[in-house]
Structure formats: structure tokens, C-alpha cells
Amino acid sequence: MAGEFWLSEAQWAAIEGHLPRTQPGARRVDDRRVISGIVHQLKNGSRWQDCPACYGPPTTIYNRYRRWSRRGIWLAIFAALAAAPPGGMQMIDSTTAKAHRSAAGGKGGPTARP
Image 1: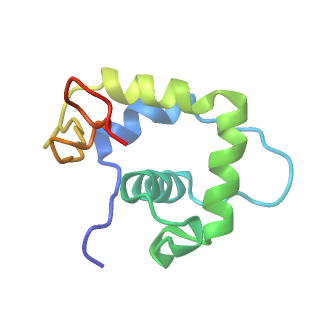
Image 2: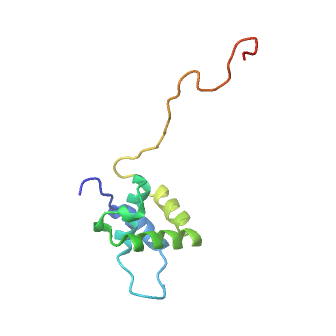
Image 3: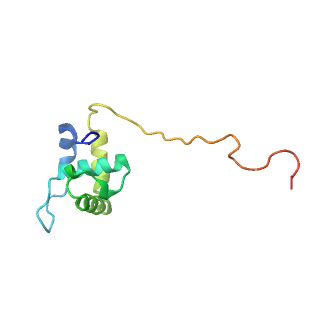
């Protein structure tokens, strides 16, 4: 599938030490695959249930994102990724919305109109 996101070896090496290891419950699925799916979803902005199957079950991806968000693990992961040496393309998003020049409202002019 075109447009998939996969963590590079350098990115994975930078964040691997920040991941929780001892988790109760069922056997964990591949962290690298799930994190790649989370980043893919965050980049695309689509619904979690529309996540491509190559990343694993959408429920697993969403639950991992929510649990790690509550525990503050994503802050450490993103800090480690930001500190890692850049590899490939780096982008900064600047979204703008074009508006008509009179979109600010108001009738204008020196006198009030009915």
C-alpha cells in the first residue's frame, strides 16, 4: 500500500529504550509495527478504524496510543525522535485557510446602516 509509514532503523534505535517492557495481559504484538501505525494515523488524521491492516488491528493501535498517552510515554518517545539525527526528509506543517477580504465581518463605513 502506498503512503505507509515505517520507522527507520535509526528511529527505532532511538525510541526502543523508552518503551515499557513489563506489561500484564496477553502477549504483546510487535511494538515497531504498532508505533508505525500510530504515527501513520496521526499523520493522516483519519479514523482509527480506517488504519491499514498491515499495522495490525485498529483496536490494538488505538488502545496502545491511549494507554501510553495517559502514562506520558509519548512525550519521551517524541523527545527521543526529535533528538535523533535526521534521516531523510524533515517537514514542518503550516496549514492556512484562505478567507475573503471581507470575511472579518462588520458593515464598514462611517455610518450605521439599517
